[in-house]
Image (cartoon, rainbow, N blue to C red):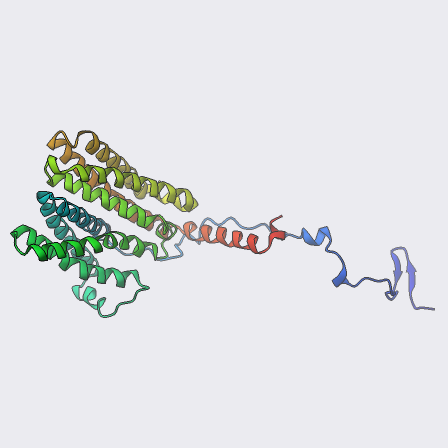
Length: 344
């Protein structure tokens, strides 16, 4: 007797023979490969109605103004250097003074939002290349005196060599001053800014170029505004292209640039920039008033873009779905890449 019993379901208690196959050598069954959780995944749309990250406590007027005026100053120094080299002296002088005024107001807006001037000075105690705020503080500390010296020399007509050196220094630092605020915003956890980290610097630099071109159209004579008109077209086109590419890539977070205050400011910015660029191209070389109106439209469009970006960021931080859903999507895509069998 083997001790096994024969039942309707088979032989009970029988020991496996030599032909038995261990479980580790068996081919995976379709049932095992297709195992899925019985409970479906929950569709997240809130976190008890509360935001997951803390929205920035920045003032829209101060920070959006800081972004806009810094970009205007940086791009304006590049146009001023070009005008200086090509003999457009009235344009060069006006843009140097404009850049000095813009960077002064930009720094004042930043200090006002910080609350105490000593906080800005404290940021210069160390230089941390991995911190956009630290790098930006040192950029402002280097760019401001150069822009001031260039404006002072141009206004007085003295020290031409110092004027050339200061103008060149401001022009070299200008693009970084126009772009670093976008890097600063994208380095935060705010979804609308962080998800646009690839396109936001291009959008800010293009918008700054359009704003500087607008300022040149306002202050420069008709005989010297040809470079400004070309820069207006280039800046407006680059701004629109960068934003469209960013919205297509950001997925659900792009809603914050299309709805609410962020959406309204973004649409107004697009209309003003496009209208100003077209007006400058078609009429800017014929009528002084048309050039000035086109320039003001470009300036207003650049300011509205910064306000749109700012309010889109605040809206994305206040709604938890813009934090969780992109993270869940990235986690799912990473799991599919690591486990191709689960994707089938």
